[in-house]
Length: 434
Ligand code: UDX
Image 1 (tube, rainbow, N blue to C red):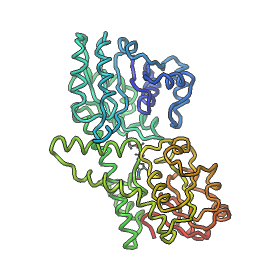
Image 2 (cartoon, helix red, strand yellow):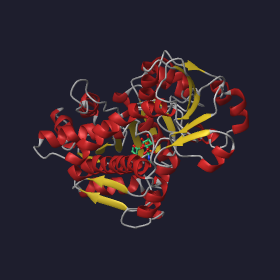
Image 3 (cartoon, rainbow, N blue to C red):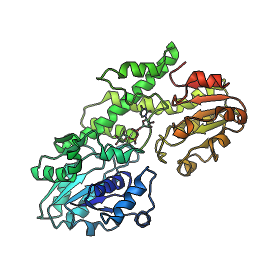
Image 4 (cartoon, rainbow, N blue to C red):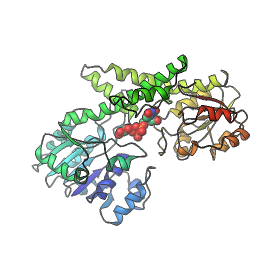
């Protein structure tokens, strides 16, 4: 099938490359000329394990190409995916849909063959209706349908999430559109991936509901962690003790410094706005957004407490800056608020991250970037694990102890065994454990 993917960002590029790998003929379009030129040379705009190779293989096989010309890529496509950004609008938190609508207008002006238009961008309920109106307004008499097909890709695991999804959601009441979408995902049908057909509005809401629910799960366990510290319980036992109940499930119950990234913070806010607009408040999600916001800075204060309540004159090493491992993404990363809280308290902050330092630098100009975990730890009064990169799971604690000024380890991701770290001579603090 001939597919056009509009937007060569995170979602568009991963989805486009995976669909090409399924055997479809895919053109990824982006208005950013530099990005397209670099993609043509095999240079990826994002860090995602396996992506460069997947792109290279499919370009070589002639199934994947890149272009800056949407007008040229519309007429031949049987399905056009809209995967452009929907950032939080400045000031009010609503999703900014201007990119989505510009694309819809351009598609409308250039349709020549029957085409299914698919929104993959995360868009508020009802956006599909407006896309349909806009494409129709261009006066085309060519048959088209607008479907919603939300993505559930995790950064760092996006390719396997696309190829082995828990489910595929397709929102459309149109039989022809459902048939075309079934063809797009046929290789996954054969793998028995569950495909859920819903109305367009339901599909749009499923995406927000899923992210808000996961964000709630994380926030719940984070608050349990705080309570554990007060009552002398262990949050990892709590997570396992409740998670083994099938109705709850063990995933997304890792206590930590709060969620960040490109989806949870933005999507919870956008859901709140939709709920507010329709006079149907979602108070749980309101609380989740607030609690998570305050938590990030509170983690900075937690570090200061471990240091006896005074940060002035102390040197603190942060290990990991990205919002999670295996990405260079710094969007809403807890490290930003943590570093700021430490700097505000008068500390000197040194940091190391395996992939994130280029993007982190401008966001935290007062933080010194180091060349390795051990270089960051040199002369430190405390070493703080902020992001659970694999490289930090087996640090040479003896070496850290030698180079640090004081052997203090604050593990905000609970990746170490308290007894082992203490046996190595450290003062150790983690989240929700004694
Ligand atoms: C998320 C969703 O998982 C994905 O389905 C959606 O399409 C986009 O948003 P992503 O933001 O890439 O994906 O990362 P994810 O692995 O879900 O983690 C999000 C944040 O939650 C990270 O900051 C992570 O550290 C945090 N988290 C996750 C926890 O603190 N505890 C957990 O148990 C799980």
